[in-house]
Length: 256
Image 1 (cartoon, rainbow, N blue to C red):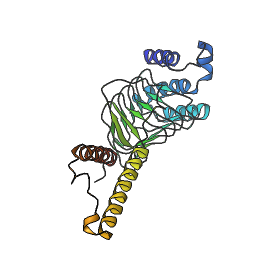
Image 2 (image 1 turned 60 degrees about the vertical axis):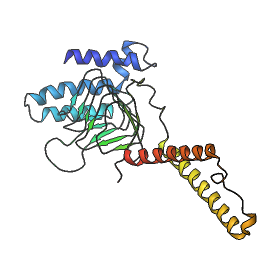
Image 3 (image 1 turned 180 degrees about the horizontal axis):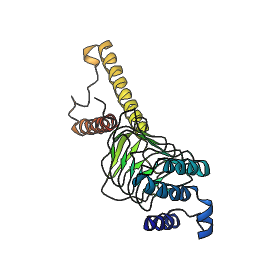
Image 4 (image 1 turned 180 degrees about the vertical axis):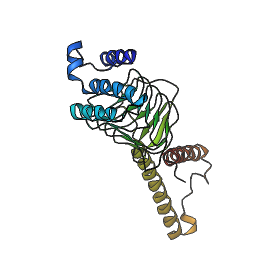
């Protein structure tokens, strides 16, 4: 437990540029204080002491605004930044060196017994206000965007955004955990792709109407008929790209 507390203390200086001295961190960082309360309560909970672990957890919530059930398993070097409103459920597991911002909930989705809260891998970053619900697995090095609601498993090295959470990025390259605001806007990309497709279809309809209203001798020749293979190829590539973005957007939330 002592080694975990030391790691919790040291990680703050690595990840928070506002951390200036040990006295300030010790007395003015509710995330660190909440982990102090939790690690002691979890030890008592683990050896089977009744009532007292929950009471310590309640005191920790009163002091810090962070609620961590004493049964939750928190790895070392976890940083809860600001932390107000964070809720971590009884069977949740948080991997080493994860970063959790204010308003995050690691909760359940019903009244089932047994494992009912998320399991987070190592170096996971969860943005402010995000909700990760149910007995799901979040892989190592995953980034979850602020305000996202994650209800399904997420593979390692992914970025998840939206409601419901969609996997929008996969990479084997580890990212800077503090760059959680640098996330792709998958919804905007898909909307842009759909708008482009609608414009293309509207142009085609206009052409067909124009050619239908003119005599056969005056009908314009389409790029395909004139043998402009380059135009057809570019149009095909554009459609394929749009289709891929739309498909990944839908598959990211397991839509059928």
